[in-house]
Amino acid sequence: MWRTRHRSRTICLSLAFVTVFLHLLLALVSLCVHRQPCDPPPPPPSPGTPTQRGLARTTHTAAGVRALAEPPTDAKQRRSSQEDADKALPVKGRKNATSRKELVNKTESLESDLSKLEALFDHPLYNTPGPAVTADDRLLKVKPKVKTSEKSSLMWVSASQEGYEDVAWNSSRESHPPWLRFHLAISRWQLYPHRDPNMDALVQELATHRIVSAVQKSGGTQLKLVISFPNYGQAMFKPMKQQRDDETNYNLFYFSDFERHNAEIAAFHLDRILGFRRIPPVSGRLVDVVKEIKDVTTDRKLARTFFTSPVGNVCFYGQCSYYCSTEHAVCGRPRALEASLAAMLPDLSLAPRRSWRSPWRRSYSRSKLAKWETDPDYCSSVKKVAPYDRGTRLVDFMDMIILDYLMGNMDRHHYETFENFGNDTFLLHLDNGRAFGRHSKDEPSILAPLKQCCRIRRSTWLRLLLLSTPQYRLSDVMRASLSRDPLHRVAPLLAEPHLAALDRRLNAVLKTVSRCQKQQRGEEVVYDDLPHLPDALAPA
Image (tube, rainbow, N blue to C red; front, top):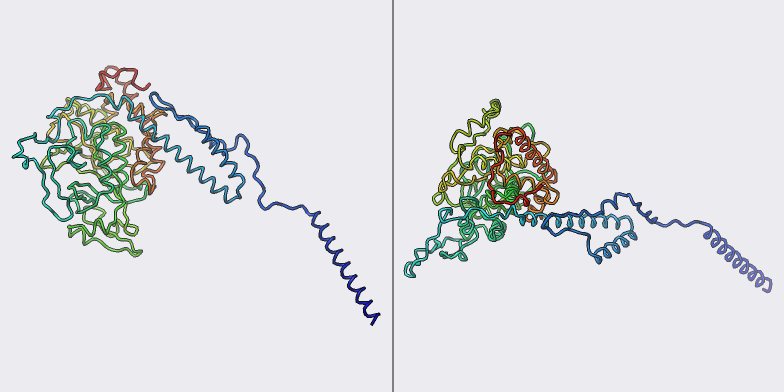
């Protein structure tokens, strides 16, 4: 027994010694192995890396505009702290931080563009006093105040139709809805005044007001609807036909192109930036095609064209000359559809309009050319014919041509004016759905009237020069203006290549006018409609 106990004690001591030896050996091996971290720290950026160059700020300055300087000290400290924190993040965290920086840069760039837009509209060239507007220069007139006993004759009383508001409007402007104030502000010189306080309310109404009726507009080559609101306002509805980034097929003729909803919206903003104010206000809107069109329409022909696509989207196509079939239907996603809504002009029974055939109308033929395309002296014959032989009609037409060239609109076959004003009035820039189709190609033939006639307003010429400067760059102020549209939250209304094309085309217009000034030495190229503008206010 004693021998057995002694043998067991010896074995236990041996096992304990072996265990201690193995632990010491493992500890020694661990100390000798070099441990690598999971995520090596990033090397410090060199002074010339793209990251630092991308973080460099650009300062925009302009006369009369508050300069955009460096951010305040506390903002710099917050940014520095955030950058230090980003460096300590793993790879995925650093990618998210980069995305945040890009978002911040885009936000700061948009704020800079919005400042440029406000400065542009504050510039003296946009605030020069125009001709005095008399009662005869108003398109519509409100009856004067009469006796209380006859006050009812001045009231607009609703017919109590279902869905419409019970309203009673009188001669007071405050009682009028935004669309009526817009109609009453139309003058001989423009559709709405600069800095019109009613404009925001009208655009808001187009974007958000409840729709009580939707019927198809007769005539035209493509689908359009007339939308009605509870306060009896109406709007022209054009649905989304193609994506923002899509370009018109080069093999299509100009008269076979789609009409684009974002082109109508962008044309309104561009017309206002150019200082013309000859396009009715337009707003983008996301429409429920079932609740806001199908369920409220009284147009049986339109209602019969609704169907559900194989993937469950609600579609319709209406009736028109072209592109009104199941193959060219407009579809919601599954019910939401983008569209442009343009404020309607006064009814033709109140304010009749005259349609004028454009002297530079295209042949609308696949094989024939128009006369102006083969006769370089074509303008000489145009200037001998009324109404281009006197007044401002020719330079008014040049304004429209410049607008069309900037947005690539080749479909200007007619234009309209209000009959009440005769020939001494502005031209309405309507129907711009085929604009902004191509950004990679400019169409020089649109500028043919300007090249052949070499005539332009001084106010237009000076504003174009202003928009070519870095302080008021056309693409920047256009981007800022479009960002205020409700559909900008879905996606930018114009892709960046279209904005870049605006700057390129503006430069082409300026070169055309400069070339005219060199060629027409004995004739006046610029029509001076700003005789009292000091030369110091004109851009260099």
